[in-house]
Length: 315
Image 1 (tube, rainbow, N blue to C red):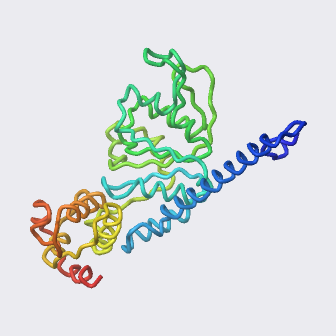
Image 2 (cartoon, rainbow, N blue to C red):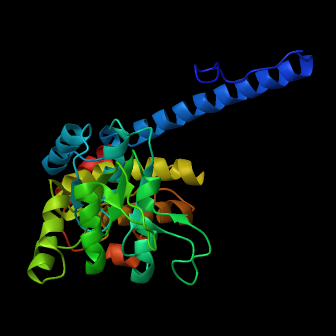
Image 3 (cartoon, rainbow, N blue to C red):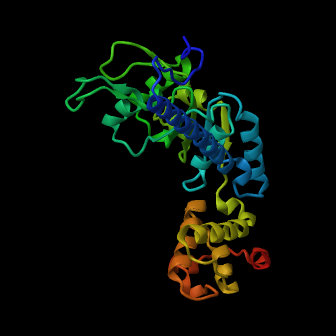
C-alpha cells in the first residue's frame, strides 16, 4: 500500500542497519538518475529550440512562427525542402518544444531500409512471422507511443505501406507483422521529404489521401541559394561550433576565401557548408585560411555575392 502511494521501498522488521543503508543508497541513486534525466531533457529542449536555428531570412522567420504555432498540438506536420536544409533539426525542434518533450522521439529514414524490412521496422513483428523472426520485435510506432515519430524521406515509402500508415494516422492503430491483435498508440507524426509529393500523386506513386493527412501543416525549408544573407551567419556559427567539437582553434578566413564561399551555390545546403568548414579548419595549419585551402569545387563557384562579403569580414 505504501508503494502504491509513492514510497520508493519498504523494510520488514526486524530492521537491519545494512538493509537501511542499501535502501537509502538505492533511493538516492534513483533520485540522482531522475534529476540527470530532467537535466538532459532540458538540455535537449534548449539545444533544439527553434531560437537556436540559424537564419534571419524572412522565409526562415515564417518557419519559426509556424513551429511556435503548432509545437503544442499533436497536428501532423510535413516538412519539405532540399537535402541538407535541416529538416531533421526542425522535427526535433517541434518535438522538444511540445508537451511530448519528455516522451520518446523516434526517427526512421524510409529510404534507408529495404522495402521488405520496412513494414517490420515500422510496426514490429511476432515471433515466427517470417524466417528470421526468432523473437517478437516492437516496431517504431510502439516505441514512439506518447511521443513523436519522425518519418524522413516519406516520399520513398512503398505504396503497399502507404495504406497501413494512413490507418495509423486515422485510427491510431495497427497490427504487427504476423500478429492477430490490434495495437493502439498515441503518436504525433512528423514527416519530411525532398521530393515533390504533388507530382508523385499525379504520377500515381503516392496516395492522395495519405498526402492530405500528412500535409495538415506544411513547413517548407528554403535552400541556401534562396537565403544568401544567412551565409555569413552560418560561416561564423560553424567556425565556432566545429572548432569546439574538433579541438582546433578558431581561424580567420581571408577575404578571397570568404568571397569564394559566398559565390558557391551550396547544392548540399547547410549540411554541405558545415562539412566544408570542418574540413578547412582541420586541414589548414596556418592563418588566415586562404583560397588554396578550399575544396576545388568551392573555389570555382559562380554566384556573385560580393555584397555579402563585407558582412562576414565585419563579424
